[in-house]
Amino acid sequence: MPDFAGKTVLVTGGAAGIGRAVAAAFAVAGAKVVVADVRKERTVAAAAEIGRGAVPLELDVADVANIGVRLTKLADEVGRIDVLVNNAGVFGMEPLLNVSTENFDRLFNVNVRGLFFVMQAVARQMKSDGKGGSIINMASQAGRQAEPASSVYAATKAAVISFTRSAAIALVKDGIRVNAIAPGVIETEMWDRIDELYARQYGVAAGEKRRQAGAAVPIGRMGTPAEIASVAVFLASADSEYIVGQTLNVDGGNILS
Ligand SMILES: NC(=O)c1ccc[n+]([C@@H]2O[C@H](COP(=O)([O-])OP(=O)(O)OC[C@H]3O[C@@H](n4cnc5c(N)ncnc54)[C@H](O)[C@@H]3O)[C@@H](O)[C@H]2O)c1
Image 1 (cartoon, rainbow, N blue to C red):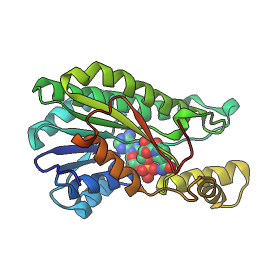
Image 2: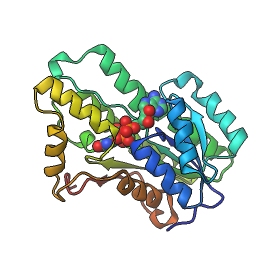
Image 3: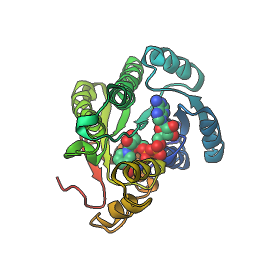
């Protein structure tokens, strides 16, 4: 396992699901972890459970006007950020012809605008002291394919893949490596919401969409948050030094590219 002793890792959306597993994995690897999430109590609880000096940070990534100031203050408190896992994201589902401007804006504000300006603020810090760093954005298999029931979500994740490519090339000469992960179907609370939305909109039994999604994966099951976390640790480590601007599919074989 790579050693992150002396490194600080910021994980957005770190209070639950994939983000929480990522934060825990970096803490086990020796890093000081900042668990950043919009849900204050869950954030404090997650940091306490992860232990090993994990620091909770209440942060709404969609509040882009304040992100620069918040992250500068964070750097004053915990030192430079060596690794950013830009993971906070929200899901939404509406048939294409019913997509509302409210849902469209909510998804783009968090998944694209928030992700971009967190990445920009952290990259500015990483560049300013010349020490570089690693940025890992959380995309999705949805960003690589047609998703008629959740077209806006899919478009936000396509934007994440695009920004990952552009940022990787813009920043690589500064020693900042940018990559992304495209998870497939991963067992988290997000799936409670997806399942509930399917049951309501398509009249399928509760739990059915989740069961179908897992059964349809070539490997035969949904993934676990820990299976995404280990890839995030790899992408932040020197073991992946020659991987730049890639979005790695971690999906049990769902998408082959
Ligand atoms: N679970 C999956 O199957 C799956 C698949 C592909 C991609 N993803 C992506 O992985 C990431 C994590 O998903 P998850 O399944 O763990 O979801 P989750 O809903 O279980 O956890 C997401 C976390 O992000 C936080 N969050 C939401 N909005 C935020 C904001 N504005 N600022 C800060 N934090 C915010 C939530 O409070 C929550 O703790 C998301 O970007 C998601 O789109 C998930």
